[in-house]
Amino acid sequence: MKRFFCFLLIFFFCFSHSWATSYEERSLFAEKWFFETLPHHLGNDLKETFWNRWHLLGLAAGVGATVGVHEADPDIQKKFHPADPLGGAKDVFNIMGNSLVLGGGTLIATIASKLADAPKATLAAGTMLESLFLTYAITYPLKFSTQRSRPDGSNNHSFPSAHASGSFALATVTEVFYGPLFGVPAYALAGMVAISRLDANKHFASDTMAGAVLGTLVGLGTAKFHKAEKSDLFVIPTMLESGAGISLVKVF
Image (tube, rainbow, N blue to C red; front, side, top):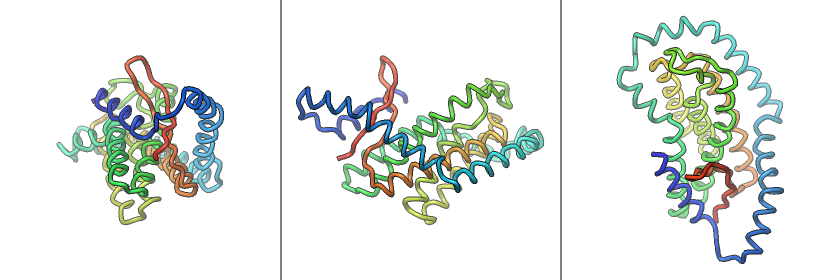
């Protein structure tokens, strides 16, 4: 799965760029990209996400809700485990919310919409891909810094839920670009992914609540920036055999 995702990422990068430039032009582009374009681009994404009084109000409300749910975590967990109300369906939702599945599926959607010459779909899918990258860039450091044990004791990377944060980021971008007709089902699906993590005994309710709040805010900020600016530049992760990094991809 990882190799397949890397192949798609490299294909998209090559497909989206014109290499018919001189060495000097590429060097100048790389220098401008690293020192000017990338900081400006990430700054706008984060500004739209967090430097907004309504978003900050939503963040405060989300933190409050997470703290409140935290107190009820043991009781809520008993409703799902070992009762297992979702049965085998939880495995399907767990796979759907996996970071590689979300990232790979979004990347395929971006490539397909570009090949189909659908500008709005390309912009939406690219925005989803970037929102995932930014969401995970916040989610995983939080996981390793909070050191909360999972309900099943498998590891101490429970808070927040990456399944929830990624799913809600995509649902939010869908809502911003396509409205309630597609946004409501996307949120319902994200909610089921979050619930499936409780049913699988991998997360507490407060883990999924925190992930949902984080993903929603990042998805909203990223979508607002790209929709307002009609930006066709996207920050995406780059994973190769020798390591990992980030790339700023322009879709032509």
